[in-house]
Image (cartoon, rainbow, N blue to C red; front, side, top):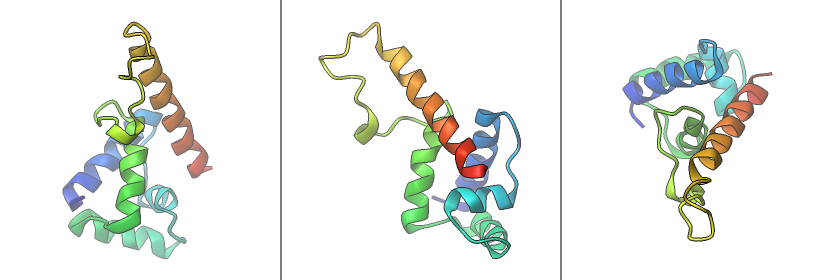
Length: 106
């Protein structure tokens, strides 16, 4: 994940949950201790996070409609899920991810 992608994700997650995210909010989502975590987030906005943090953010990105649901989470396109139910199931997953983001920020 590049710095530019990280900055865009911050904007997109904020839109998904209905409020802008600060650097401190992103630090919480990444599991970084405050206040140094906010400084780390600002550095990542230039060069991007790597490793486990980048993976965590890819999962949380599913809260936004702008990001695809990764294959390992896409259980909706299986033969045992009726095609008519798939959009509602995807929406449920995104709603759960939005709730997860909100919970991590509390």
